[in-house]
Length: 359
Ligand code: FAD
Image 1 (cartoon, rainbow, N blue to C red):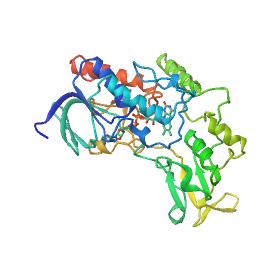
Image 2: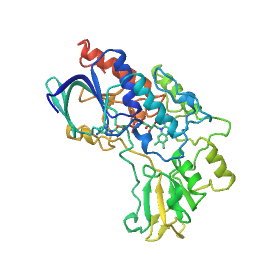
Image 3: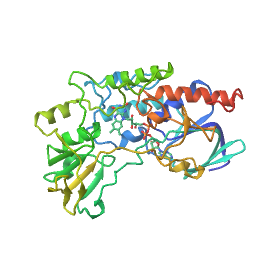
Image 4: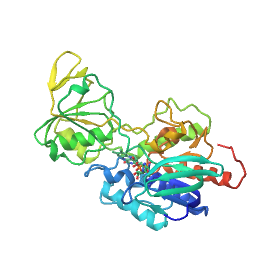
């Protein structure tokens, strides 16, 4: 590329968190660019399994400004989310460059120099919105290196065909584990292992309740009330149609964790053994922050210390969308709005020279 481009703000990542930030940046008239490693719109949703149903109903799955259109089912499909995000970018004319992978960032006197595979960019402020999908987490189990079967993470799971007639161990008790189990168990002999007994929402309670709880926690936090005794998190399993159907076949019961892997499967805590051909890890993700590694800000948990969304040690860096640690419900479509808005408010204040260090 030619001469280096200078912006007020660079957003790294191009999923829903980046688009949310883009919406508020656009409204405030800032110059900005969104650099995304994908080939097209949709962030991590581009890579999820084909039959995925959101756990959030359409009314709880919208970004700022424009509600997600309601589909035929209460719970949107993956394709409906992809379509929504693509149209959202177009609607607000968000300046997304693709595919651009940011490799590292460097502090300069006036802000940041961003190094990407397609060139370098400069900006006064940086929003990192790279999500968790590129950093799947697999827990450390004894004997795993000796296990001869296949292993994949839910991040790579697309459809059940590859598991036909196999003995499959599915590990993880969240919505991913339940939905993948529901599907794979139609083709394979499955065993489900969860760290704690899975928690199912009642059939007649939709996923919106998880967001109502998050809002209650946020309100309590704002009011200075304790939040620890309020229910929270997005781990409860929403009874989408496929999961209800799996329950009717009797496959939706979980076992407690095993002791270790063997060459052919696992050894349970009572000493008995089971053979498995494959393991599907539905055990979550960690923040994808490789591009920030050279800053020396990443802690042992793989996170960056923040006040709200702003880095404590780098006051020109904000992190949006990764999970509860960057804002309540920030790793959800509807929940990221709050963090994106406050982030852009803080950036505007900084750029206006009003409060250079405030958080
Ligand atoms: P991502 O979608 O991961 O976007 C990050 C973007 O950054 C990607 O495009 C990636 O390519 C890009 N990127 C990464 N590194 C770089 C780099 N170095 N340079 C340039 N670009 C980079 N939420 C809900 O609200 N409702 C649901 O029902 C729901 N269901 C979910 C089901 C599953 C199985 C999972 C895993 C999550 C679900 N979520 C749900 C949570 C959340 O909404 C999604 O994970 C969402 O994709 C998070 O958006 P994001 O923008 O933060 O990150």
